[in-house]
Image 1 (cartoon, rainbow, N blue to C red):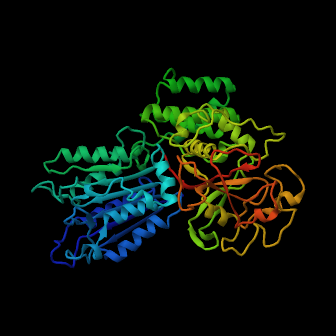
Image 2: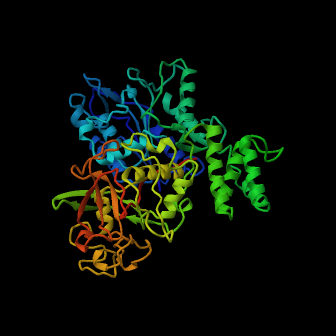
Image 3: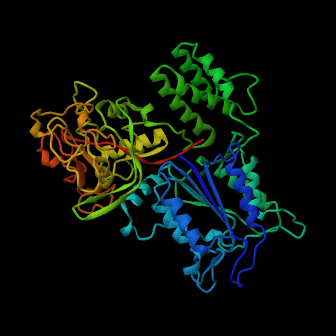
Length: 579
């Protein structure tokens, strides 16, 4: 996972109809230094492009959103002229923009909005220091009938409290962005950017937790603008349900999380019995205890840092899980809902579990439809009996209403699968239950977890070009997969058949159990959460002959149906980074 930023500052224009500006170069220069500084922004990659041509800018913006990895944090900033056409559409003017040809020589805001919608990157931040920037098209996805399954997939997540896209603007829809607050203003930076810069430097950390979150940064800029005589009202735009405060922009160097303190406290806590540790932590979270009389400038951060340390280091799995829950509860208590901490699924689900990294590529379905596949991760094995049982048994798991919101069906209870070993794949679980499981795991980890789209499944299973019949090659072997031809007659542990792994190390994609995909069978470019249309299943099972276990074989299943050879595996293509 990387934090990437792309900054445009346009001061000079070739069209005489566009006046030159004094401040954009210095604006992005200062922000560049802060974002690249490990003591502040800590961004891994920051690029500044003063006076870029529109076609260069368009290419760089497209590359930023569409070619970033799923787990990246992406920030795009523009400082320069913002122009509205006769229909009210917003355009960003670059060096060679022509006022009489905005569509052909400027970057349209609606095109950036479309890129943000289609990009498989959940943490996206757009900052506009230009006139009329509040006219950025917020929340519009265009014609829903033309939406892609990726759009629908992430729309579902963005309507939940973990997805994060935000647009921070210098003005509302009709205001101009000012370079000066008044005649005596001698700042090197424009009005909006100077407060953006000061907020990132540290004063934007309004709650004193050591992190400058996006909501805090906006409040700092808004209040600072109000204190001037300039008529300029910054806006924070985004989709419904977003928790902007979750997005970490910068660190406050004046308040560091007390890492050394928390480690010492953790070492002390681990000397206590498990029951004493649990009791002490609950008292802290409930406000009935304290770390010390001399707890530093921000005692809440002491508690949060201690909970993180215990959640990672406690020798008891039960205790670790309890501390993660308490950390979540404490974060919501002091910062509001949605303030999660990133956690890998391997620390939640019992083994065997590991991710396989799948590079970008392409796959063909229905013999003629090619799909580009961005890089993603997929679980090495199908979800097991024990892993799904953890979802069932957790207090925040199977029976919580939020995981079923908008789904076409909700079973009264899970099917009670008998299993002599926990390593068997979980079966008798329908499509809706699989989606609920991925939503729960998304909330637990802070990373988007979902079912794979079928072209992702096919690419992970083989070469993606249709030249490979099975994950291991072109030939059939009963030693590599559990199908009817193998003569076993029942499901087998997911760790069996080690010879049947794909080129990317993914196991069990041929035979044993059918695996559910996210998209519809008859309209593969569509996803429906509420509908009851046929869904795609892939991979064959122990009940079917080997030809149905081929990589390119498609099969259909009703989403509400449970059966004894139907399972699922999970994938992750969007990661979130929290405080």
